[in-house]
Length: 440
Image 1 (cartoon, rainbow, N blue to C red):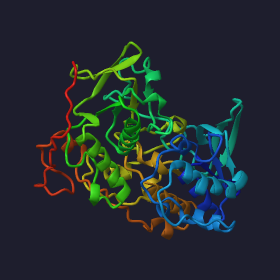
Image 2 (image 1 turned 90 degrees about the vertical axis):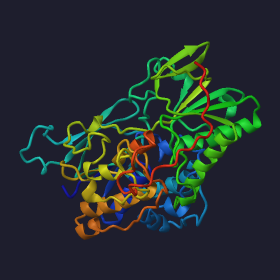
Image 3 (image 1 turned 180 degrees about the vertical axis):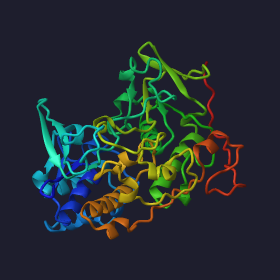
Image 4 (image 1 turned 60 degrees about the vertical axis):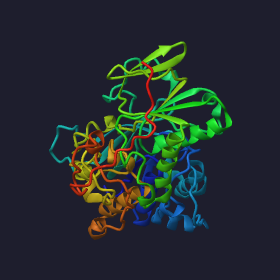
């Protein structure tokens, strides 16, 4: 199979970096991208400014490839998604040329002549990748290995707290948004009431954008509903975060709550969404209701699409849907340290030989992924595919600490003991700020 390409699914940051590493090692890549351009998912949040600086957003092998055509990396600063594409990802895709195929949606991956049940001679057969183009025409590609870097962007979690769409959520789809608002396009939010669901970095960004809209549009109302109680980690690590802009995001959200610009509702687990005169009323599992919203911004995380891998043999954690070897390290129910170790080929390999899940998809439903993580993953994975097992086993990255200590169980029960690598006596501080009354 040495004459066959390695197929990379997804032309996002990690997929394009994987292709650059493969080329550098003399292995021919073929990148299949469902969108009509590079980093099509990033393009959908183009207005959002990243909290990682330029040096943390450029892969080393990609930079070496780009250097051959006169490109130089921006030395500093924090780009928006649009700037990340124009300043790095689009030039990288152009340098890869026709090795990147757009409008190529992967509908299934298997082994030639072998479904999931067949053991005999399985590993000796090439992968078969079924692809659908925009016209609906199907084709089949053979590959020596597959790197799935398809991400999770187009599989957002629903508003429902039980992981299923809340009652009425599908019918209210026109009133829901799953992206951070853009203050350059404020019409949907200015002078209106918006409810934000979620408690991660995307929610912090949404609060920041909405506050800027409210500054310019009197009468704009913002309600922020989170599932947990407020603790020391609710607003991120602040000054303790080794990515300063990530720490600053949460602190801006905290100030917005303390100032009264944002009403914070805690312990709110959405069970139903009821239409009311063209607006949406959110109801939680205890029957509490939020005031009717013109828009509900649902930023409750993402989940991987595993459907097109159904004929391959996977070993995934039953909770996170992430490779089992990394699950305990990134599981927000268990992980109580601010740092996460880098992961490589040995952590990401599946029972199906030469199949690797990388990038956001490798984290399953966990929310803490960084571009740096993905670049280290693809460096190691490509080394393994190329047979350089020493390089594949080597760890070349120490990830920055978040400054947050505490798992989800601790946050839900602020009187409970800390766990994992938190000191047993160190209980989270409970902050009584900005809890808004709820109209019932």
